Length: 203
Length: 243
Image (cartoon, rainbow over all chains, first blue to last red; front, top):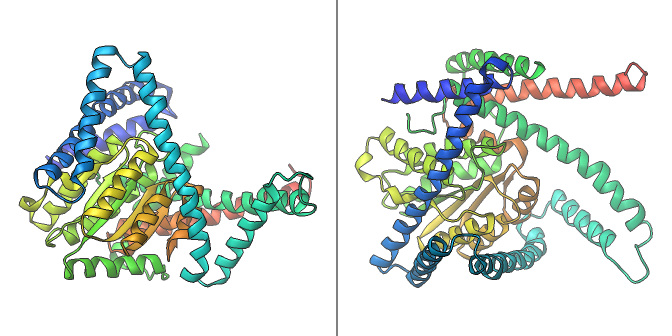
């Protein structure tokens, strides 16, 4: 069975990759990608069942924080029923999205701002080294250079240092990191294509 | 067609180097975060605490899939090592397809360790479908499930800051790696030893996941030298007016 799944996975991967370079394989590639999209849609349902199962277990065992699990399941059931009855495009469903989900995520973003500021303050205590000092000075210069002040940009910092850091140093560094990540992704993909890594259940 | 040549040459080199690495494994430079991860794996089994692997919200259907696959390779190894622990590892994902593979990978780790009967399907979880939703769901795991170490590996943006904050509150060991620049900046500021750039893809090799992982590190080095030479050659050609 393991060999069978590996053969299917490797063949599907090779056909999709081949479709980018050989026009004859393009229809097969499109077909396989369409199947993948449908399966990804079905995976959302499986993910929701997984979420329900984890939180039901928590409630049944009366684990710490199970009140939040009750709230989560209630919200899930109510939203699901309303969406089934009213359809997702209904005004009430839009209110649920724009009045609850987006503000909650915005609140988390606000919380993140504070926690990042706190992390920056603690950085030198956590890791007293040259790169931490460079990191903090760069962050301070960029914030000062981007600040909107009544008299405009801070001379030199806003007009020369900030653009030089963002467009020369940071851009060069970012490209270097992204090239490294791309090479890592390429070799990881090749390992999966060869069947050396089998994230689909093989050993 | 150039891309196809690069892929075919890379595939050939990976195959050859894997065969070579089976006979003569290489010495790796020390990466403090991965050394700490190696120690943490052993410690968590000894003191009966749990590891949490946060795999992020990288979808397997787009360009972010590389980091997700690297995270799964690491999870497979962690699952095998910690499957016999009193408190087996849990993993969370922010994408449904990645969630499915998380469960499959955990199960494969248990199978490899010969303790498939100990596998609990809910140890692989989908905690949310948006970046912040995922982080909020994973924070709840960190706070309530006796976790001693949080391993953040995959596609993370600024929301990684919420996970690092929750880990700090519970005094956990924290190891972080992301393929996203904003996520890397957040992890650099919030963790003791962050993995930068392609170090994310080196975790398997450092934990002894096999010759193919060592070979992929060597192949990355070879390709990096080609990129450096191409960049320098291009700059020189531009300077003398050839291009």
